[in-house]
Image (tube, rainbow, N blue to C red; front, side, top):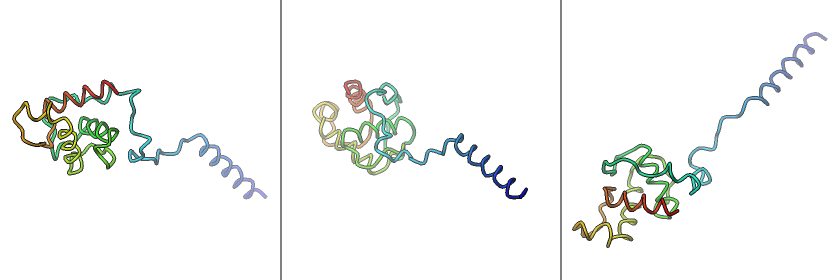
Length: 129
């Protein structure tokens, strides 16, 4: 009698709370659909004036990776850490724009580092997306 009634009240309270409490977002940043697209590109510019290179991390690296990922230079999903995949992706980007980014500065090949020229070119392209 009473014990069963008490169980039902508690069970209904748990169900009620469960329905009101949003579940934690289990879809991590690794879902392709979570990568921002052009409707909010302003947030995705690379704002640092420091050179981004292997070992760099943070929001600017993530913004760089989002650009590289969305434009098929980077095949792994953005995580904010500048590792070997990001370095290879930057080199592919630099090779494609070598006449603008590398030759004028005397580089014979891609560096894999994001300095002023590479950053400015990426930000220019982000602005056009």
